Every structure is written in C-alpha cells, then in structure tokens.
Length: 121
Image (tube, rainbow, N blue to C red; front, side, top):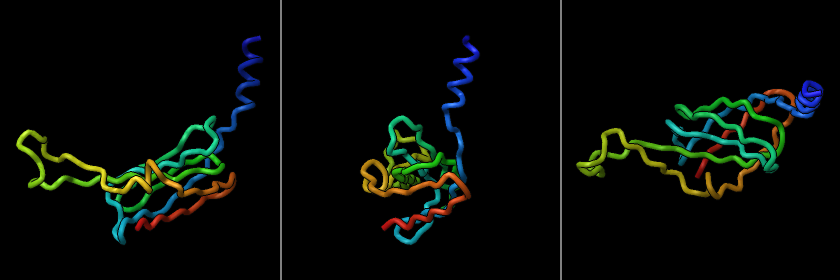
C-alpha cells in the first residue's frame, strides 16, 4: 500500500526544468557577482535561481510564470570600512525594485531553452 501511494505521489509531481541563460547588467556595466531568482507566482512551486558571474547566468527553471529578482554585491572600499570590519566585506547595491519589490515577470515555456537578458537602469 505504501509503495502504491508513493508511486501515485511521484506521478503527480512535475519536475521538468528548462535551461534559462542570459546576461545581467546595471547602468550599462555587467554585474560581476550576484544572484538571479525566478520566483513562481504559484506559492506551491519552489523558486529556482542561479549565480551571476561576470554578467552571465545559467539556470534550470521549472515552467510557469515567474517573478525575476536580481541581487548583486560589490566589495566595500577600504576607506569605508571601520578598523573592526574584516577585509573583503561586500554590500548589496541594487535598488529594491530589482529584488524585494520586483515587478519583472517572465513566462517560462515547458519546451526548449530560453534566453533572458536584463539591462537594469
């Protein structure tokens, strides 16, 4: 009986993901280090995301409508650090309209690879 229930549960779960890749820039410059997330509008679906490196990302994303959230960080200049701060400390620098308050949406189709480039201004 337990195997039958587990099998039915697995059949009901769609784990298909497609590749989404692209570039991300802010004020015309590639984002050197950051994260991009594709948050579903359906709260029952888990978000997907990827690391942004040198302005590019490659993610495996489940199909459906997504809210795109982008975060980026940069080194804090030494002159802004206190003597108590560790070297190499980073700060987020993108405005909230690109992450916490993002209204950017994308529809991820269930077939094929997708390219999505973001030039943030």
